[in-house]
Length: 146
Image (cartoon, rainbow, N blue to C red; front, side, top):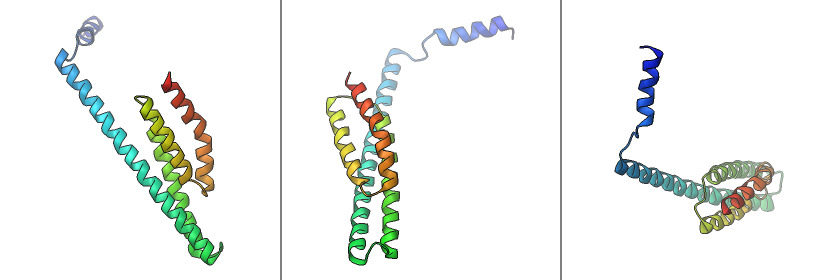
């Protein structure tokens, strides 16, 4: 096949719509549905990770207060809280990468950001990561306001 025939064939496929009107509308609806499901699933994962991090934080604090900071169980529980908090920040970063659809959702994201900040409290690595990413998240929310 010559280059002219190849470019003509390519033009034929790219110049004509691939889907009819109703098919394109159905594809757009399906894409929005998939995006909403992904958004909802990520939001629930963030909330579950938040509750996990808070629970592990309370367990670690209780162990430290009861048995002291140098207790092996207290150190183990503090490490588990650190891991849960890092996971929470990572999931929230994924959640924030999705576009917000309106004012209510942006406010919901701000509330969720406060919960994440509470969940990473006491975790040095996760807290520093949260503080590093927080200005970017706030900028994303203000960009979506415009």
